[in-house]
Length: 171
Picture 1 (tube, one colour):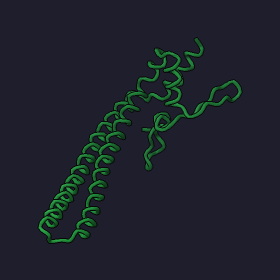
Picture 2: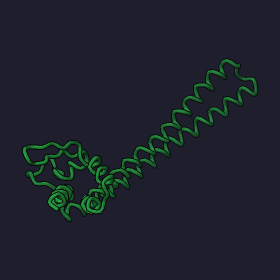
Picture 3: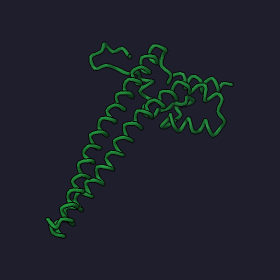
Picture 4: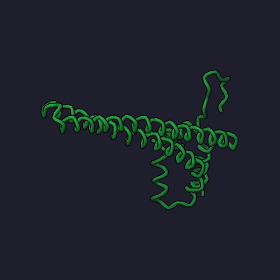
């Protein structure tokens, strides 16, 4: 029973006050929406660039079919365009995935931080081990006290967010 109370105390440290939770949840939602919008905008720009490259590739092929450029020039320019098209396609995939994944990961971390105590109390041994691995970086014993180091971003939830021009108060 003592172990359970200790565990609950550890998890409750990570969960911020209701006021901070509400504020952080709203800020996270706004940031996530902004990131998704930026991702869509960036992807649209890359799509336009990709369309232009494909149009250039088509014009190049038409020039070759009309014998207006020689075979070597066509091959060199076609290879260059094909490489640029592949690069842009990769950038589109990467840009879309990375921003969306960051926003989704931030939302999931926040949701997890709010339910850690409940999850811990209802989890089996394997799930508890996984929670420990996700949240904590290291455990040490200082005499009879268990000391822990939190992984990012959970450490920020415990320490609180500070503003550079603040009076030392936590948000």
